[in-house]
Length: 248
Length: 214
Ligand SMILES: Nc1ncnc2c1ncn2[C@@H]1O[C@H](COP(=O)(O)OP(=O)(O)OP(=O)(O)O)[C@@H](O)[C@H]1O
Ligand SMILES: [Mg+2]
Image 1 (spheres, chains in turn green, purple):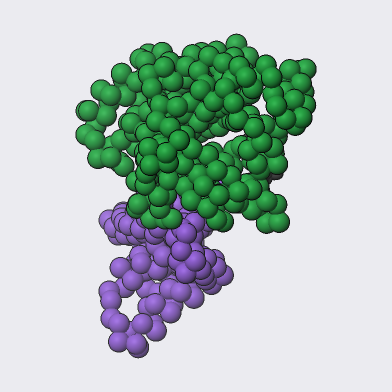
Image 2 (image 1 turned 180 degrees about the vertical axis):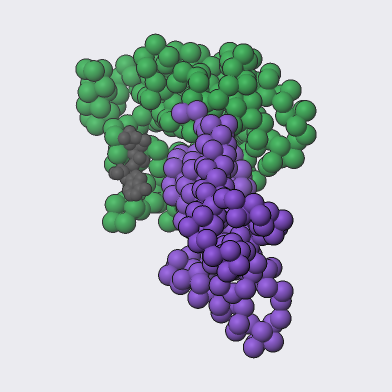
């Protein structure tokens, strides 16, 4: 894959937390509209990898670029860059003192300078699309976990991002709410959003992913199509990881 | 109480002075206190240090010493300002340190995740503070700030020591004329208590209105 056409490209990325080498020379290229699922044992560096892409974690060495542009180090350029990269967290992280509608309109208004009227109109479309239009005037704590996560997805989409990052978006949810969030993500993938998703939901990976990446100890150990990866993992580490996940 | 009513005009005028001092110094201390807190959690080390030093200084120096210093030493240094505004400024900067302490405890209630979400959406540091951190921190500390405001009302009485004619100094004058200390100072005490009660109730009302649903 030509990195000039890549939506996201990481080359030789290294990251330490103190003595701990969390990302070891990681290289990854994600094409426009591609959906990449990242799996791996706890502590393997999946979240860290995700967070380096909008520089919530700075890196020690290597290059990261989005849509052909190198990731700025700091300041207004970095903020602009972050605005183009949507991020959905495991713990939703909605602004507790704002209504759902305000959560979705705040960044378009304050970062992009969209008028309140336009921002609200677009926010309502997004909230309807994720199925919580009737919750617009309520506060985050009044929503279920699944509804909050869908609001968080709408909030990220409101910035019209070039790529969406998801870090275990369903692992804080009660089981009965997982599918309502995954359904939104599947439809997003179907519409051509470029997505990088850390998740152990194999159903989602099989339905929506173009590629599965298996990480262990800060390295990309294996990558393949979802069916090839889940049905016939190549490495011993991937096999033992999958059997431990399936045993659950 | 009767004696005070005999001097109603003067007492009310002095009460007005107390209330004006309280209102201006109160608003001023909240504004300064919030700014000091913002500096204290800012990414700039020098600002953080200055804010820390500010709070430490004012928490560790008696208010009376500051009032005396401002009223008697500043003119020596060539800074001449009217008495009452000087007292108001001293009260505001002094009480701001306590407001800053209260607000800082509120900052700690704002989940780190929300700040990360704000950064991920492209907010800069100042926007995150202004739009996400400060509003939530203030909502969490309405009662503590109410308590600082009650302390401020009581502290306005110290201005009497440097010559401001506010409630305490006025009733003191009435007592010099009438010589009924118990009735007069008890009456003044009731007035201070009533003001404190109103502030406490107002804080409770504000808190119920702005409390964050969790
Ligand atoms: N802020 C931090 N400071 C120090 N060490 C950290 C920090 N964040 C993560 N780590 C460590 O880095 C390693 C990788 O963490 P990371 O969160 O990326 O793993 P992960 O693959 O997302 O795991 P999980 O499946 O548990 O979420 C872990 O050993 C973790 O303890
Ligand atoms: Mg993780």
